[in-house]
Length: 178
Length: 376
Image (cartoon, rainbow over all chains, first blue to last red):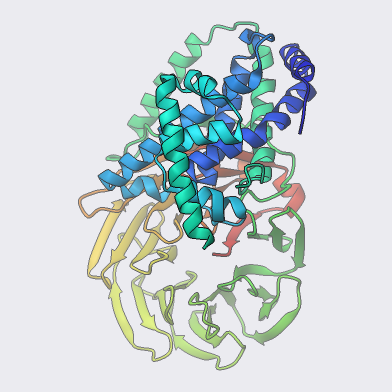
């Protein structure tokens, strides 16, 4: 769904003035990529929903302070991707500590579309940090410089993670397609 | 690689999240008047401490807290859909049994009572007048049998096709094949408590006339074990893995393990009344409802331990909660709150989301309770 920059500014202005329909336009425009980015990092549809939803709730809370001259997407994606990385790290820690009680409440979703079967499956073999830079680059189409800003990393680190992640991804896809 | 394909659940999650985000947005508007919330925060903190002090001894209460007075705000005016996709909810009410599909469409099976699901949700066992009937969710009756004093029909849940239906007829416990054949008496002088099948076996737990829990092979009639709970049970339920049997007393929970040799008492008879309890599917985690004067609380035991079990408070509200049920995959709880005329769909025991639905009595008639969320 393409939207002009002017549309987005108008939606933010309208939402700041209390318009639910403008907020909904902003939400519907940004939801797919926010959710998809979270999903591709965490590989859990419930967690992805929570992460993307919490990012939008943060947007609602901060709406009055938001500078309309700045694009909304990078601001939202910064929250989504960083929370997704945190969630993945926390899950890994829980697994290491064997806390079965925490695992009980998050049943994994059954894979039911190509994301789950191919792309997401291949990404699952990477670390959350590598997944995040690849998702930012190829799903959200940020430049390495922008990714460095979003994640608060040196640009060289972003480049090396991208290169290593894509190499691993290519190897995994190759294996699966054979 | 197809980066622009929707991820699993993307659209449904978007619809659900929009409701949450728009509700937060609408709540935010009056807050712009910069009201000073500090006195209310202090009062809430004091209330939480008092609640902790009044709660049953030995139980943690500082979990995820959500208190409400007359039902949750921003409730949906009706049940438009179930949060768990591809599931169906069975509701028993004074009008009959309702089958609700995940898209919110529903069908009344008029005049039926005490309906329960077969293992895969293909059939229901329910009582109509003096008949026990096996019927499809669309109302087509497959077989029926007449008996006086019918109550508590329950399908065995092995899911192999060789099922049984247990039911009470007066003070007797009877078992009939899932195809309507082979009806026979299993026990006399039983208590009026719905029997419970252990998953994957024709093994049935029931309460005898002396208030003891009896576990019996329904095919051979052999008693496997008997035991006594803290109080005469009002309800029985097996955990999904078949390892534990829960006996809910008026104000106690007893859990039997290891074929009755192990007895856990996570909640003793001195506690506030226990209205309902339900094992999380495929685990021994447990949700239960307690009623205190003027308020009710939904609790969660993530693990049962012989040395004692700490409960986490999931939700508390004014008035009366009565039933709690898990979604088939264990991701959601539905809690009925008749005094607020609401049901709450609670995303996991850590309360990651609450979807309140009001207008329950208008939709389903008086005394509507969720009787089973189907199917794994």
